[in-house]
Length: 481
Image (cartoon, rainbow, N blue to C red; front, side, top):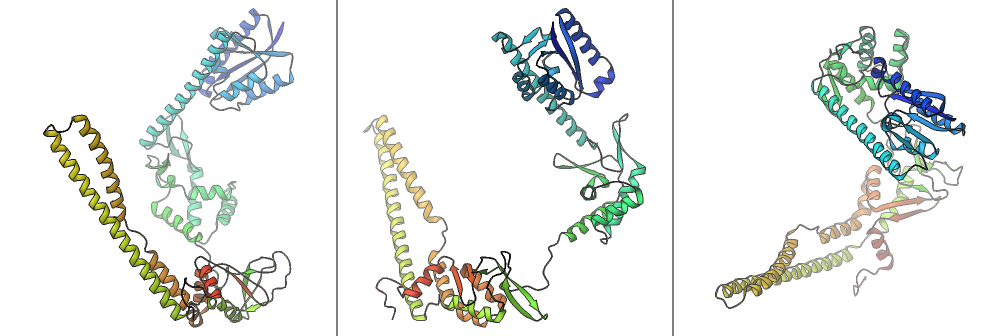
């Protein structure tokens, strides 16, 4: 006599209360075991949906079978009672079991006939399709319920589901807690932590701070609710006014405003320590003098404190090192404008050439069409040549269209950069520290500082300008003197 376990399941507690499904399954399976000389060692019953893996007693059955090598038979009424998802199917398959499904007349095992395995696989797929379809229908029903103004789920604190009338009603005992919560937070003098403590003290309720925040942001209390990302007007009784709710949201907005430092330091975030690569930070001394120092996150280093004025003088050298003399600037501008003129002339010549070619193709098409009408060329020749000419015409039109598209004026951008390099240092000398820092951030991508020097990394194209200033090689053939 083989040992076996029984598994029975209903998909809802309502079916369980009806009092027929589980008993009917157990009776059928017990009788089947007796007729087939099987000894039932354990019975497992689940009263919940099978749309997800992890059913409580299904899991207990798996553990029992893993620890009981002498029990390799599972009895279930039919496929959709045992599993409705592929994961559970594979779990049982890995245990090398013999599964009996009396209502389907199937015995499935590793050694079963291929036809039996095929039919069982079809049943598994159908069971999965059933649950997917059921899920879609449930979602559809919930959406229709929301359209009618009825919240299709469990309501928040202060409300409860009326299961007899299928509506949502006020739970007046808990509604006092919700109202008090909104009243406390609306005046802006209480933090979420303080509201949470007050509710615990006044009503002896255990709510987490995050739950309090979630409730305070829920429009359900004003008579509306979100479902599927859409706001619906509910039929339930509002507990607070829209004015009070808006005031609470305004308090949240105020609390979320960014906190600005009392003092804004000009070069903060611009520099790194050359000794340990930590950031250089600033602090105010005697409420009057600004000093910069290494943050020291990697331990004490040799970078001294710098007064803001002293550091500003050192940083000015960065802009001095990219200064383009006035005479060089004029020659560079002249060369760039000449290049621009030549480029514009080339573009105009290319456009004129394309327009002339397009006119020529159109004339050929017109003449060939007349030749076709006069019988001078065959239809086949006309179709082949017209197709070829149309392709050429489309390519030319696309090229001409490209000339009409607005393009960035690289020459103008280049001229602005050259003018900035020419004037930056003199502008820097006349600016307050905050404006000096803005100039430096335009020119630099990184900058390190030690006790004596600064080590800048210039952004493009200021790195090129820096090299040209150093080598005096501005343009081929251009005399730097």
